[in-house]
Image (cartoon, rainbow, N blue to C red; front, side, top):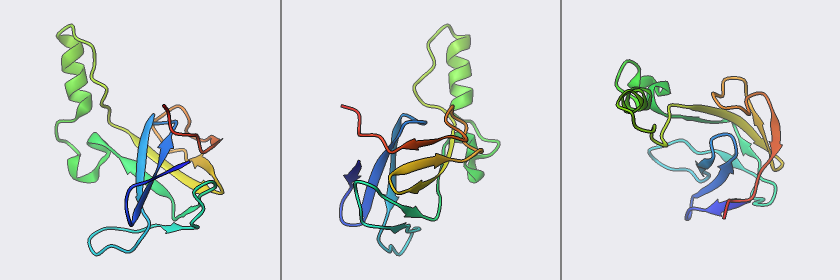
Length: 119
C-alpha cells in the first residue's frame, strides 16, 4: 500500500488526485514530519495530510497558475495539460483515507480504503 521513498519518507496513492502523496515520517531539520504507526499495510499518519497545488498554495495566491495555463490552452484550441490547481486534505487511519470537505476533487467527504499503486 505504501511506497518506500528512502530512510525517512513513504508515499501513498491518492485515488482522489490520481497521484502519489509523499509523507516525511522521520524528524527532519527543515520540514514537517508526520507520526506514522509503522504499518505499511494499514498505515496511520498524524496529524492530517494536506496537499495543495497551484493557486491554493498561500504564497502563490494571485500569481499565474495551472488554471491560467489550461484556460489559455483551451482558448488556443489545445487540450488542457494534466496539471491542475488542487487541494487534498485527509486523515489516513488504519489503511483508510477520510477525505475532508475542503478537497477539490470528487472524493471530498468520503472515506475509502487505501488503494494499491496503479500498474
